[in-house]
Structure formats: structure tokens, C-alpha cells
Image 1 (cartoon, rainbow, N blue to C red):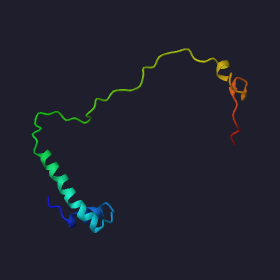
Image 2: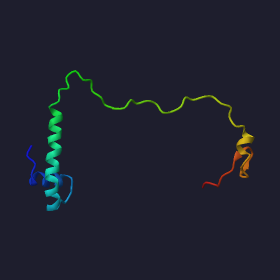
Image 3: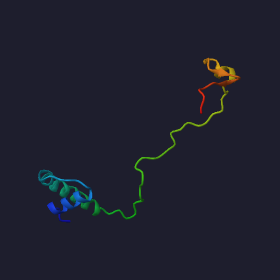
Image 4: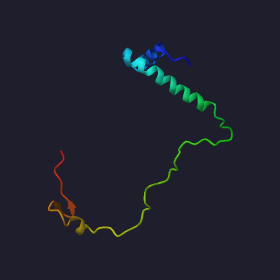
Length: 94
């Protein structure tokens, strides 16, 4: 693929970027190098290699649920003064 000023201007236009001449002069060799590296990857023989969607094994990081004794109603309400008839008392919602 030919990488030149026109290509970068077109890509910049599609990405809604206003590239300066200095940026274009800086980006042309960088984009060429990137594309060359990808063309090297294209030449690698991958026949017989299973596709890998995640390089690291995915596993559940959550702990197992374990049944435990629950707080009693009195214990749950013991540290608040905002209670009424066995429930937490909150502000009125209108």
C-alpha cells in the first residue's frame, strides 16, 4: 500500500482531524512502518493453529456463595436513631 500525504489527508478527513503539514510529515514514515509490520504478520503460516480470542484464560473472580447467619432485625437497627416500627425511617418522598 502506498502511504503518502494524500492518504493521510483522506484518513484525517474521515476521522475528522485537521492535520498540519508538520504532523503529516511526521506521520507518513510512522504509518509506513506500521503497515510493514502488519504485512510481516500476514506472511506467518497459521494453518492448524486454533483461533484465540483471549490471550489470558477467563475465569470467574467471584467467590462462591455461602449461606451464613443473617443479622436480626434488632441488630440491623441497633446503630440508628431513625427507625419506626421495626424499619429504617427515611425522608418523605412526594
